[in-house]
Length: 255
Image (cartoon, rainbow, N blue to C red; front, side, top):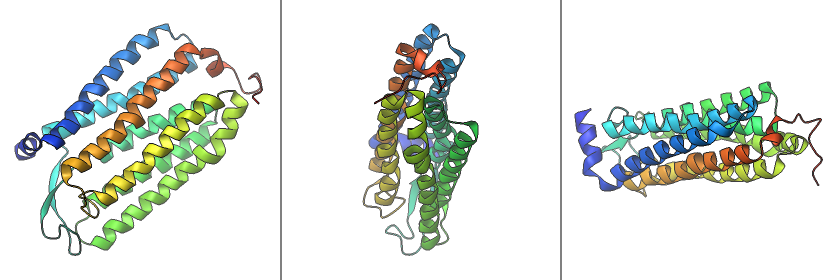
């Protein structure tokens, strides 16, 4: 662990990508804690706390990366651009996503006024997306298996996108939250599409990007997909609580 901790400190790009996210996650938690004091509705507070948990999980995970606890050196298999070489695997990120992205979907599903079974299904697909992504990152026995897990993870992501693109927009329209939902949905879709692209280009995939740049790619996506997402959603909930508490049958019709 000490070697991994030192490896992070010795790579300026890698270290900055981690420590900046720790700072931003902490700042986001503080801001949401202050804003939440004026939110009275239990449903609105639940959405607020769900989004706060995104940053709570993230700061814990990034601390694990900073300390070297959730980082390992792995040897890439034959056929990989770094075949036979040791490279740093930031596998702790996948645990972050497995625990934090369900809160993103919970918040979006509740914002859309969706049912518990649909929210649960989207979250299950999301968790499997993250875990199979972890398998892709840590598989060293075969290059083909690495890309197999990558393909499976991408398939699960498409399952999540079904709810974001098909099911929940209709429900958000009925709930009267279509405007804010579509904004956050677009942000989520664009950012989440970036993760498999960074994986493919980074040291885990084709190794076009080094480990520091790869880490910054993930960190930049996290900033928008988590902290910016959280700030937009909680500010909306704070300013427009009635749209959250109104049942779909009572929601005003939207053009």
